[in-house]
Image (cartoon, rainbow, N blue to C red; front, side, top):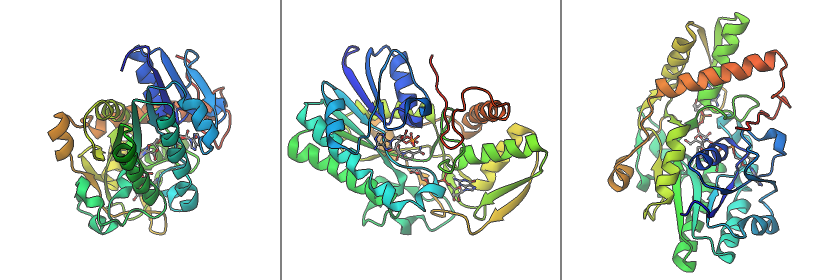
Length: 344
Ligand code: NAD
Ligand code: GDC
């Protein structure tokens, strides 16, 4: 990819898309097109020297508009969130199939050289995630298919669509299965936030308000691995530029229980809280970890930021956002939308 090639990032107003645009810009890419359906004031990161477009990519004509001239396309646009969102919005999650379908068609029509699709660990067979012992999921564990209802099935279908556009039409596609990504400039309130941001926010709230309690969804013994955002954008580029033809895990292999996640957040905050477990809250699978044998084999690399290090950066960022919001400072435009923009 040349420094002057046009690169399209779909979902650039969101967490990972915004971070990818930020990285590409720092790397010197000059012709960046950032697209998201949200109004500009709700984008997490937005840069004035980038072509920013607020367009609904469910619509085929908008996908054609944005794909024109693009050499590389990264599809990070989806209607998604943590368990609290995907468990209650299955149809909305499945409708993201329109974005990827229309973007693939447009990429083919306008001759894009590469197409990257952001899939998810939610494609894995639920039967393989029943134990709390953090089962490491290998790429082959997606089949026979029993994906997360709604969101996971859409991801699995869209993965296969990428594969068949490559096999039947010759479009170069790359697919990564992200495992729970966290970091600054991500969703931290409003209902779509995932566990790392939610736990940081709850610990901050408890500390600031002097309420020495925290509500945890589930029993706290569920296991997950969490990938820091810098590893995610690094991995996206490595996979996109590789010859890896099949969907591949992009996740940390440092599995923790949710209780351990809370331990780390408490340690960063310097407090101890009474834990209240809400067993009726959305829980998702009991255990999940990323098996990184395949990515190691292909790239001799895997996400490596320790959770303690990444969570501290995330905690500090959320703390600043939280305090600014408490002060009613500019930057928070809308309570429900997480409305922050960066101009540098
Ligand atoms: P995000 O919600 O922060 O960003 C997604 C963006 O897509 C949002 O800004 C949203 O407005 C935009 N979008 C939704 N519908 C759109 C449409 N019709 N047209 C244009 N834009 C639209 O989420 P994220 O965490 O940045 O996730 C990026 C991608 O990675 C998604 O495909 C997601 O499913 C996938 N993923 C994320 C994680 C994670 O832990 N964050 C894990 C697995 C997979
Ligand atoms: O939401 P999530 O991060 O998604 O939840 C992880 C675990 O943390 C769940 O068992 C949840 O019940 C628990 N948890 C405890 N307290 C809280 O306050 C909280 N908020 C949240 N959100 N969770 C809490 C995710 C999907 C993503 C994505 C990734 C891929 O599933 O939601 O959309 O695709 O998977 O790895 P998680 O890890 O179940």
